[in-house]
Length: 131
Image (cartoon, rainbow, N blue to C red; front, side, top):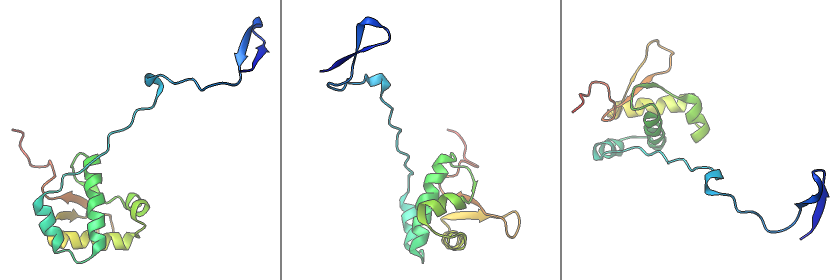
């Protein structure tokens, strides 16, 4: 181990080589809990009649986004889905339309070319009573 003098005084030395000092547990970053979405048997039965495989991928990501939005209706997250899947807006809208046809989600639009507001059946807190 090599020591070098520093500017603090003639008796103080700074260690430049040697074993790494173990950081305390408090200084280490905390791992975040991983999000998960509950998919019921009814959802699986509905997904069995979906025509496109891209619709199943979109459904999984919409379920995760629904958890982030506390299971309330949300606008279709086009940029989020594009980053995660690489699908364009039209392909995403076709997948949402396919999922709506099956009945696994509802999409409502305010205007013709506006993004749909998604409500996933069986997860939405709208209309539920607290027990």
